[in-house]
Image 1 (cartoon, each protein chain N blue to C red):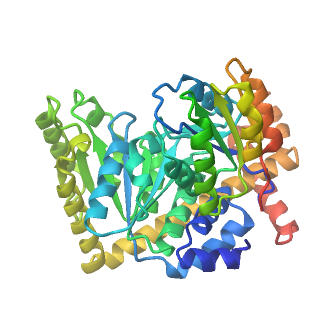
Image 2: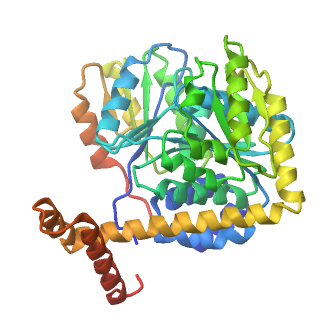
Length: 136
Length: 322
């Protein structure tokens, strides 16, 4: 009966050990203000916890924030854990301190968006709106 | 996945299907309704528990502790944590998982965050649907956490068998300002943060309120807890188990079960009517005309409400089953 578009649900998570989540919270708030439902899981998440949260919350989008420099080690593990749970249709993006040189590798892993410090939150909102996949 | 496939997979305990089924129920889609219809015969086994109370009383921490204790007793646990949507953007930040980190790693726990989505009356409808999905999926205990701020939350209490009302020793204002409706739906009273000063005063105030409440077959116990350190959590689960035994075992149980069913049907019918009225008002521009008439005092608001209802009935009889 409802023909309304599905509400966009986004998981914002911080893998690894950095204890600073200012950026993640700014993005979470911006997406909320854009009308999305944002599940925020806090700091120090293992890849297993992130994938399990994505599954249970049935989000269309997963955004990872990382400052520690461990992105090349942790991101593939998050993706592996998602795949293992059959969560293979989510939109992935990331942000934080990610050197330019690593961006191609991260895109090759399946991240459709890589947003560095100083990115206008409007750009991220547009990105999520445009790419969030409609699912049956 | 279509409805029949979702029903089969949820019944088989597939977690991804469970997550997707909840999404459909939450969206109140045609698939969601079909899934609920298919799953309903499998419900009725879980102990369904509501946890409500004002913001800041420690509900999330209490729910996490409650879930851990249920796990210790060998039971699987489904959790639904409801947070308000922003009335402006309709978005929400759902942060209850932060206090339930360790539970994420436990395969016997499935936690789902839910935004209230601001649809009056519909929250109870949605929550009871999600509880049914967890129940049908075989979870032994299903816990629903809501902010006990308004009428919505009183109705959410109809979605569960046992309602826990949480307060704190914070000056007793909490207890004083508790809504009468909330007091009456609670089967267990919890005074959380019981390591703070003033806990005995709060307990006494609660006793006083219970003493003047109409007599019931079940007398709500008052449990003191410190959720952060797990203190009193075993006692809380004991109290809940006792209430469950009371519900399932006593001669009174059948009456209460019927009362719950009655409240659910009425809440669902009201939510459905409300939605239809809104849809009619929007689609035919009926509301704009009525607003104009009332604002200029050409028609009184009650007559306008009747006119809107008449339009709903007309719309209904003209519409085909979608």
